[in-house]
Length: 630
Ligand SMILES: Cc1ncc(C[n+]2csc(CCOP(=O)(O)OP(=O)(O)O)c2C)c(N)n1
Image 1: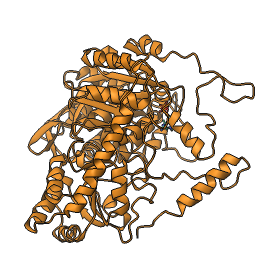
Image 2: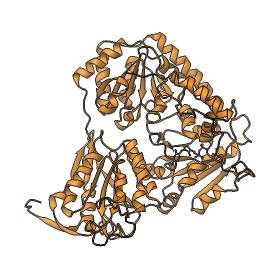
Image 3: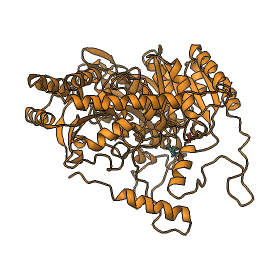
Image 4: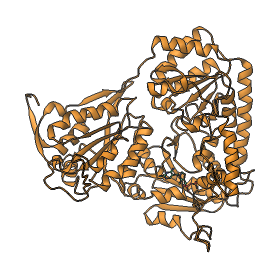
C-alpha cells in the first residue's frame, strides 16, 4: 500500500462491511445502494470475523438470517432481479459445508446473469491450525480448499489471503457485479484468520463510490447491417429474452414493434416484455411456446433475438427456425450471445440499440405487410380461446386441474402481482398460458431451472418491492426440496404468498420419462409396492401441516370454488400465507395445450423394453429435423 494521508485500523471483515455499505450504482440518473443487505448463517469460519463486523456496523448493513446457504443465494437473486440488477445482497457463510452449499445458488446466478456477492469463510491462510474443522486436505495441492468449487460458477473469484489484498479484490468484485455483460455470482473467499486480522486502511477505501451501469450504443456498421436485414425481411419475428428486462427496454421494444408491425415472441426470461394484450405479443416461443409464436418461428425469414441466449427450449433444440435461408439478427450486450446461430451481431445495450433501430427504420417508413399482421392477429385470437378453455372450470365444486389453478390466480391478479416459479410442470404451463400484465410480473427462473428457488426468491422479490403481491408457485417436489426459508419470512414478517400444488410426485419428469421410454420410473411419491417399485398408494404426507408447522398460515382448498376463495383471502393477507391445493390430472380437453415444438432428450439407442424401442424410433425422426445454422 502506498503512503496515505489518513488511515483507520479495522479488521478485514469490518473493513469489508464498511466498504460494501458505501457502494452505489447509477443508471439513467437513478442512484441506489449496490449491496442492500447481507444474508448469513454463522459457523466458526465467519462468526468471529464477518459476524462480529456485522454486529459492529449493523446500522450500516441490514442483516437477514437464512436457513440454508443455497436458499440465501436464491433470495439475493430474487432481490437483484427485482431490482433490475442495480442492487443485490451479499451472502456470508462458514467454511466447509456452509460454503459448498453456495455452489448451486452461484451457478443459478451466473447462468441467469444476476449479480450476487458470496462471502464464504475459508480455512486458515497461515495454515497454522491445519486441518481445521471441515477442512478438505488435498495431498497434491496445499492451496486448494472446498471454496475452489465456486470458481467455475463465479464470474469473479478471489481469495483474500492477506489484509491488503482486500482492496483490489473488493474493487474487482464491484466492477464485475455492475458490469452488464460479466455479471453473475462474485465470490470473495475469506480465510477465517484473515477476517479477524487488523490493518490500517486508507480512508479513501471507505468513501462512497458510484458504479455506473453502462448502456453501450450500437456500432454504426453493425447498426447499418441490422437495418438492411430488417428491411429485407418479409416474415421477421422478434424473440425477446431476459436482456430486454435487464436493460429496462420494454418501452423501446414496444415502440420498435409498433413502428414496424413485427410480432414479438418471448423466452421464459423475456415474457412480459410486451403486455399480453398488446396486439403484437404472440406469447412464449419454443418447446413451451404458443402455437402462434411457434408457427411464426417455423416460417420466419429473420429472427431478431433481443437479449436472448437461444437455449434449447427456445430453439426447440435447433428444430424450430426451419425456413430455408432463415437468418438471425442478435441484439445482445454480450458479444458471446450476439454471435450465436451465425447471426448478424448487434452488440449493444438493448434499449439503446432498439431506439436507434426504430429511428433508422422510421426514416425508411419500414413496416411489414398487412397480410402478415392479420395472419398473426387471427392466430393470437385463436390461442386466447384455447387459454380460456383450459383456465375455466365448468364445475366449480370439483378438484381443479393445474391450468384451472392458474386460471383462478389469473382471475385475481392485477399488475401488482408477481409470480415466481422455476421447475416442474408449471414453467411449461405458465409459458404457454400466463397473461403477463406488467413487465416484471412473470418471474421465471428457467436458466438453471432450479427446484427450490421459488420460496427464497419470493422473499428477495418482496424485500425489493414490499408493495407487490408476491406469489411463489411450487409443486410438492419443489416444496420438499427447500421449504425452510418460510421460517425467515415468518421471522421478519415478509408477507409472501405460496401457492402449493400437490400432485404426489414429479409430474413433469414423469411425463417426460414416459415419452422417452423411462416408464415414469422413480418419479411418483408412492409407497413401495410388492415388486419393489414405487407404485403403491400415495404417501400420507401432509404438506399443508408441514407449512403450518413452520409458522405460516395455511388455507386448504379442495375445489375450484374453495381455491378461488382461498387465493382471494391470501392475496388480501398482510402476513405470510400459503394456499394448498391438490390437483386433478388434466385430460386432453381440460389440460394445457401440448408442446408445439420438440425438446431433445436423448433416448436409449438399444433397449429390450418396447416403450424405449418405440420412443427411440420417434426420437430419430425428430433428430432428422435438426438444423445447423452456420
Ligand atoms: C434441484 C433440481 N433437481 C432436479 C431437477 C429436475 N427436475 C425438474 S422438474 C422436477 C420435478 C418437480 O416436481 P414438482 O415440483 O412436484 O413439480 P411437478 O413436476 O409435479 O409439476 C425435477 C426432479 C431440477 N430441475 N432441479
